[in-house]
Length: 311
Image (tube, rainbow, N blue to C red; front, top):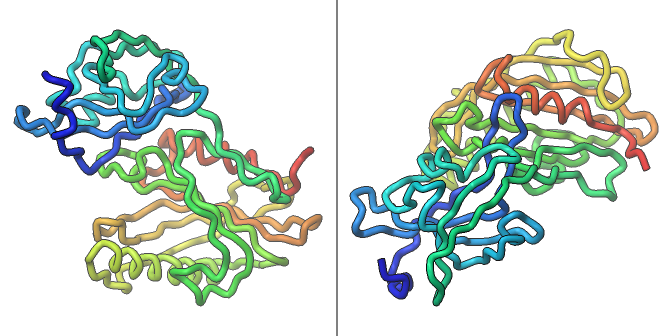
């Protein structure tokens, strides 16, 4: 292959998230870079080599001298040409912290170089230090923007406060057991006594509004009557954020980004934080029922939530 011809290649419109895997009883790790796969005209599946899109400062990749624009030719002896994201993930681009990965890397104007990287644990996501409350999300999860009530897709929900969302590593992978799995944190003004009826009403409004938004963005027409939310009170955890808790469990059927209906198991825990006069609600959402491994991560985030930040 002639590396000078790279400029004529077309970048395939997808990005591999390089460090996102959940492995039973082991901590997922990251190599510290993301990539784009180039178009490979000589390959039947049109998959070419990988080009580094970004390298995180202080990561294993950065410490090894890798930089954006470098080309990954092989992963643990598996050629990147002709292999898709799942195949290259299994070859070693995804895995657990502490694993060693061998890469063949081409830098512009230099001979092919063999690079050995040891995957490192992710740095957890922390909510802003200016918040009165505190929680931590695994670093291989994707954090969304923070939204303020009234929510853009559900303005009729009569609450005031903010919403944080975090998506599981396999959120966008329809083949993953983590598909469309995520968590929601509501930090609400005042004391809000959520009943089953209130929760079901708000969740119907929330996900029907979200369906309309996704339909506009992804060119499909949702049927709002097919969006459902059914909850019941449950025993669950006796406390949340250091305060007595109320628990709900149920299912929500919603539209994904492809216009398909997906049914998620949903657990909600709420409590009132008297020191700040706020109500907090934590939503765990997953297509996979308990005891799927993902619930351990959701529970860990929930159980680590603090109504009042410890200094």
